[in-house]
Length: 387
Image 1 (cartoon, rainbow, N blue to C red):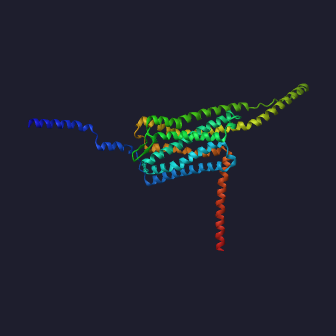
Image 2 (image 1 turned 45 degrees about the vertical axis):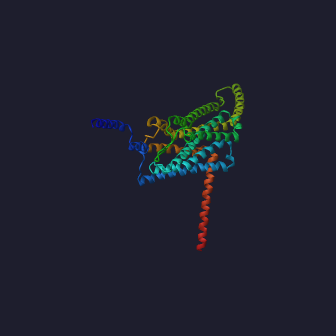
Image 3 (image 1 turned 30 degrees about the horizontal axis):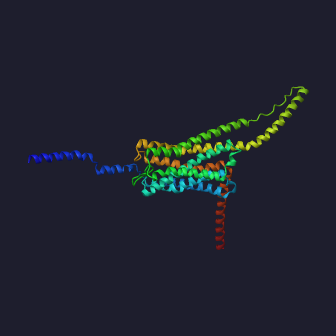
């Protein structure tokens, strides 16, 4: 009996030593659901306010970019190789508004809970990353195109053919798609625990994706803007015209004649200079417009996307690779600030492009006149039936 009791005591001690090392089911479930700890709960007034703002932002983005695409496609004067990049930018922003913003809006209205399944989560993240990256890379290529147009005004416009620009647009979209492929083929899995849909937090993938999608294009745009600014500064110095001096009143007749002859020669040279300046004035104005347009685009791009990418870069190092420890409302606010860049781009292009602005006005004016004509016809028919 004593030996049997001693054996039972040893078994109990061994059991007590083994039990603490095995995790319980509740702890496993807690780790699995930890990604859903930051889900938000909105009341009805908050849902109405947030939903109204998101709908206005989405619809405005669709209308602005669709109007730009239609303008370039319908107006013969705008069908130029240089506008291929603008159309590619508008298509990328339009795809963001159509294929990405509605799902993000629905998810935000229900507090951040992902309700479209794990399979569509990967498809959604791929579309989001590809279209946003294509928009950013197109802005980068536009800055390079503007710089080459200014630095090589005689040779670059000849090389900028339709086939060349189409190849550049295709390369931009292929590079954007390359960022979406790793999570689909197992390098870095996206975070999806039936509650949240979050892009992969793998450290290597985060560095690669943010560098290609933001930091490298940002550096290129800054370099191009600086070089364009220097070119404009040099052009301003070249276009500074010094007028010929005038003769003083208190001089004798001989000196006045000599000065008059010198002034005639100066005027002849001055007229020749004016003819050259007239030919170069259009180039000078184009340089100034390119610098201004690129500066506004760069400023809007930086304000909209820099906070989001700074957060995306630092989040895996602070929170780990499984979930996000950043409050969900902060992430969503910075994400929608980045989406706002897709709304701003078509209006920036229209503001600094007179042909686009005129086309916008004509399209809207014709549509408005068509509605007025239809309404007046209905009113006339009503009066006629009443009489």
